[in-house]
Length: 105
Image 1: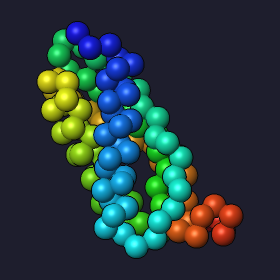
Image 2: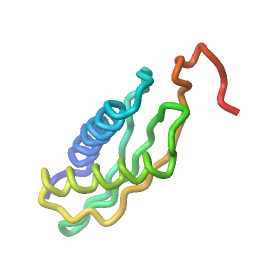
Image 3: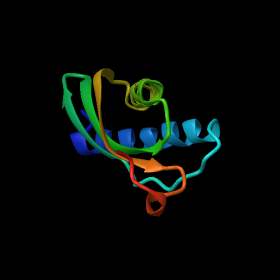
């Protein structure tokens, strides 16, 4: 069995890949904090929790779905586990001009 912390590291890497893929299709480039992940592994399945920043403005629903689906597929592929849940917590919305260029209300 793969330890929780290893699955969490794989999920962080997958989240970075998903965010980079999404950033490639949107014009503004912003510096986002690294995602954080937790994993609960049981009997060949895993539940994942991700905390991350997203650029603003962005379609939150579409970006969230993209990250959840990508992370689920990627972690399942790399670990051979069935991913039953990927929850997201959006920590910050980072304005496209960077955090020093305004606040998100």
